[in-house]
Image 1: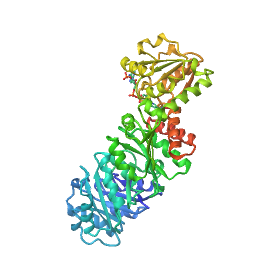
Image 2 (image 1 turned 30 degrees about the vertical axis):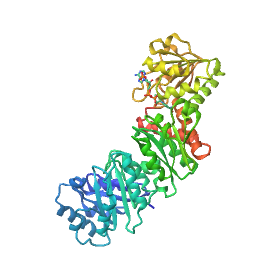
Image 3 (image 1 turned 60 degrees about the horizontal axis):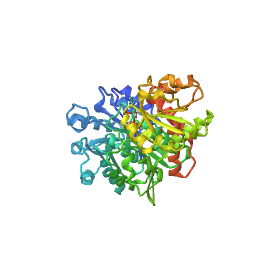
Image 4 (image 1 turned 30 degrees about the horizontal axis):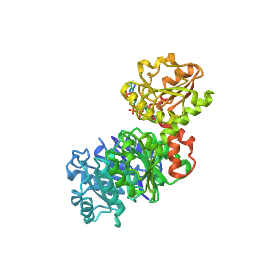
Length: 498
Ligand code: NAP
């Protein structure tokens, strides 16, 4: 089982021990970065440790912060071994100068490349193994997710008796740090907390355990994820990992920051990739990469969900039906059904508004698309055969349903609303696609006016639940998904979203 190791970069002995003692028990190892400490009492540190440690003292040349000459740094490491440190991490180029290591301390011989993923990882591994390490370690920078498979292959294809650590550094390399658990790495490194990364791309220890459930990952774990660029703020990992957890499934859901979806699919399908959520900017390009698509995805021209199995890649669109269902539920609560008699004003003509418009155009009596850039409204309205206008002409209509499909009102600009308050009235339905915050200014003003409201949270959970059901064939644990989304929004926005 791959160990979870937290790297500590605190300034002195007390701070390191304090942090170490607060770590959860699933953290089996702690890396103490002597080079990051302003002062260190090695004896106190090692006698005060509550779990096995890796002691590292790295020079700037090898990605650390120590200004000390090699001889002094290696001397400190030997002293750590005399005091019983379980592991030392020594760079491949310095290990010959380390000499005899006292006691039962084991030596990790490491190679770091902070610039790139070199093409000859196997040759580097052979060089390390020639030095008879107790553990071999290769950490290289992934400039793009396309660099990560080389590292995963190294792990997957490795059959040696010396334990191996292999990982990709940088944001694009995040997946290698999590999937290390699937491919049997000796350990993976995590940071103590956000902002305390000892190396680029380290995932906070809390996320490793509570988001990715790293301690339960194994060779059979199925892999899912969101394909986007940028992807760092996606709420989908929180929602889908919570769903897998609630359903008791052996699966993990990752963030894939992808530049080329075709290369990504080719490279990652061999790693038990079972399903993907797809978002900006890949929804349209993904369509042509599928073996089969549903009719709706073809009509909208966008795939937001991919299922991968022995029959190939199946792409569909769960955005459309989930948005329509949110509007229908709110209309039912407001006594506005059937929709065929309703006039709907949809504000926005971007990707989200497009899904809403495709879902509603044949169900409602009249649909008007209003957008800041009138040409975009005109284009979308033209595709669907509905009306359009600029934002300045919205007040000329008296809609039964108003939908915000723009990003206006989204965190952090929560004081804004795309709809003049005088358009909101008792008995109408107001739906906001924005889910962060879940209660936007528009929805608050609509509630004050007596309107029935539906938030983007409902839509988000609806489309994610449909993805879960397509992937697993089981009913989605919607409450767990909703709770994960709202909890995640509170964390991301400092609690101001609800
Ligand atoms: P998008 O494709 O970038 O489109 C953005 C839309 O907002 C365009 O219509 C744009 O008008 C308009 N807009 C942006 N800034 C504006 C401003 N200052 N004043 C007036 N209009 C403005 O984005 P998207 O993917 O459609 O997302 C839009 C919103 O929907 C986001 O808040 C997103 O989180 C939400 N959404 C939610 C879900 C869900 O599941 N709940 C799903 C999809 C989207 P122009 O055309 O003039 O630029």
